Image (cartoon, rainbow, N blue to C red; front, side, top):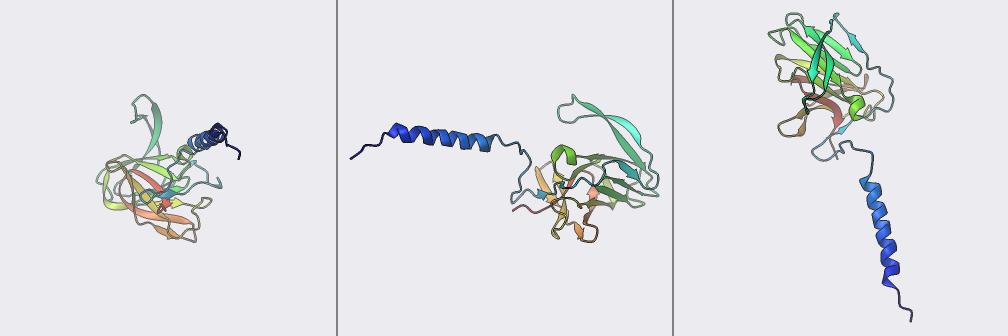
Length: 198
């Protein structure tokens, strides 16, 4: 009867386990994976929509310097678009269209739009100024054509609740003809097009 050397089995098995852990632990995909609480966001598969801003009603940008809220060390220039509260307006940048009805705010709204799609790899936008609440809801429309979720009827718009750290379903309406989803907003925040996690 032949005795098996335990080191001969232990060393290759340990080596294989280390290799598997290295492959799993060193993955470049640092995106948010869908869970029961986190949505699956649309990802770009066809970059056919330009990210250049196009304005309706001739909104004229005003440039302002903004300090990064993260650590406060990075400043960048962001364009804001004044919207007259009596007239309202519509603004489109790349995949995102924001429609502000007349009377949505009592004062001129200096709209800021930061498309985070290229930074995050997901169809997400930051609308500002943060904290603005509306007397009448504004409508956000996200064009999902050329994304991983273009043909899903259960796609919606989510907003990020900073207090709870969770994405909240805005009960968006999907239009299969335009492959876009729309939702009415009560305030500005971080928004993304997606569908429920697993």
